[in-house]
Image 1: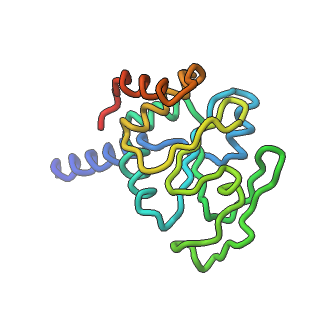
Image 2: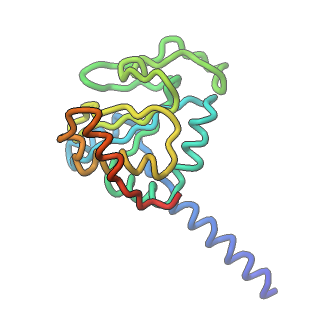
Length: 182
């Protein structure tokens, strides 16, 4: 009986710790509204349902405890399906996916108008926005936790503001010491 109690307790603790390891994902519309009350930068995960590297980014990076903690404290996090069917208001325009086919939910689907507007051409892409909702930069491809850490801190600390060339970024990159656990 005692053994069963320990197993139940362990299962409960495991489920609580996994819940605590979640990024607080919201929609872009919600993030833009929240920025008006409490300005923070936005980190947007632009993904598709069929994309293998997108699933790896979600599983390996967006569930990393250091990434979760840093993002939840410093950013509004947006998860956006690049081929989804939601209607999004951004930059004074309304975006939708006129070619969305609900029968293709786990296969390639029509590309959302916002995806094109953000000039996202590869999945996954993490798009960073400033505190006023203006695009800072898209970061293409799968990022390990320590790779994403560089960009999370670069934009959060406004270190990008003083970069005027590729050489400036290279200097920052080479001097950067990651702190997140891999």
